[in-house]
Image (cartoon, rainbow, N blue to C red; front, side):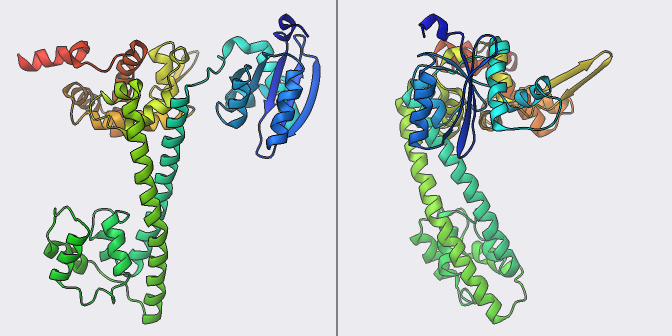
Amino acid sequence: MSNDACTEVFVGLDWAVHTHAVCVIDAAGSVLDRFEVSHDRDGLAELMHRVGQHGQRLRIAIERPSGLIVDALVEAGHEVFPIHPNAVKASRPRYRSHGAKSDASDAYLLADLLRTDGHRWRALAPQSDNIRALRALVRSRDDLVAARVAAANQLTSTLQAFWAGAAVIFADVASPIALAFLRRYPSPSSAKRLTESQLQRFCKAQHYSGRRSAADLLGRLRAAANGCVGAQTEKALAEVVRVQVRVLVPMVRQIAELTHCIEQLMRSLPDGLLMMSFPRAGEVCAAQILAELGDVRERFLSADQLAAEAGTVPVTYQSGKTRSVAFRWACNHRLRQAITCLADNSRHANDWAAALYRAARGRGCDHPHAIRILARAWLRVIWRAWTDRKPYDPALHASAVALASVQGG
């Protein structure tokens, strides 16, 4: 097949956990090939071979924007078009009136959507190796943090059942000092004879920050009510606490190690320094934004497109005289969480951000809505800095400069 002819071939790949259905069609929509491949090394090799028989640079539609298969297809030189599952679901009635669904039919649907509506989507551009590495670190850390929160909630629930004081003696039950305390004192009986001087020595050995004195900490421990449980029940719950602590300790340590790796990588990347230049961005929050933003500037041609991807703008429904505005559910949730975190932090260190937040609250917006409004405003600035490859400069931020001049006057 010639290179010219291969541009008239379209491939749909219905991704699944164990097997993937593939359909290859021509410009008229006729099926050229159908097959399934397993999700393993041999299956990936077969996919590349069978697809390669129809051309060296094909257009391939798939419902996910990332993953091993997506990376392999992009690296092989094919144009990969991610199509949102909602768009696929909405298109099924075009092809069949019944509600049945199969992987093979969805593979054909994806290929035909690309044939008829390919102008609506943009092919994935491969991110640099640095961004892919950063994304792996950031997403793994985020997942570990979510697991830590779940495990800490379990531990808190256990403590509140028979020893509530141990859950509140320190600010965070999953902090290293709180876990060390529970490892030594897993039950009320084990801490029954704990004195102020012993607690003070413990805190010193754990390098406690010293925000609260040993007397205050001991007072918080004693003031909380304890559950009325028998000796055997307390012994069993103490063992549960020990097990939960043993689960949390390595998790907290691994999160700290991943955080250190992220900080080092961010400081070595020009885009990392650019993203960290925003007020209160820090290393981790800036890394979360950059990992989702990437370094392919052609991916977001406008700030509005980036705002829609980040879910900071609502969706408008209008039909005749009826018009409604609703929360945007379909978006990059990781990017929305990161940019709203930056917005929330920035209002404590940036006068322009604080004024924008106050104005939104003054109009009756609740806190999350006001933060999304502020995040939308920051995205305009971030998009411009990212597009121009220049760190944030308050002197070039016209709105911030105007606000400063008003306040100064």
